[in-house]
Length: 126
Image (tube, rainbow, N blue to C red; front, side, top):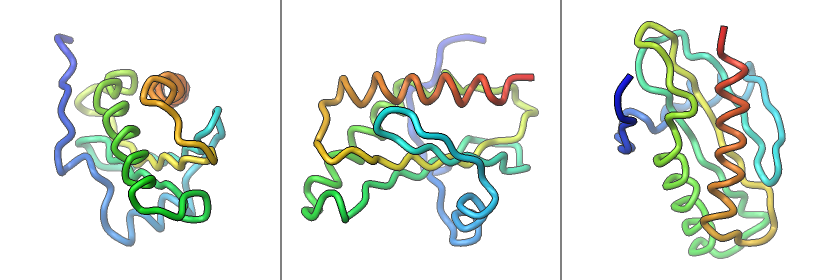
């Protein structure tokens, strides 16, 4: 398989109103630690696409929301190999929703995200 790619390209960002609405309407979800994970097979072959959400209700200051989104994105970038797939498998749409009311350290976020990615990877292994 080779070394994992530690990049986060533009193609890996979930954009488009129809895709996001489809994920939230038809996708499955689970809660793990301070995250809610919503996921849906895209039906297309390509990169997994992610969306990161930090609710304004929990963090009023945009600086805090952006800090958390950067930490989550970096943790995903370093650990996305947990949900690697074969080249012909359909990609996933994934939403990471941060639920904690505290600003966690990068190490805590990374540990929780690894658990989430392992569970997500196991649910799509056949």
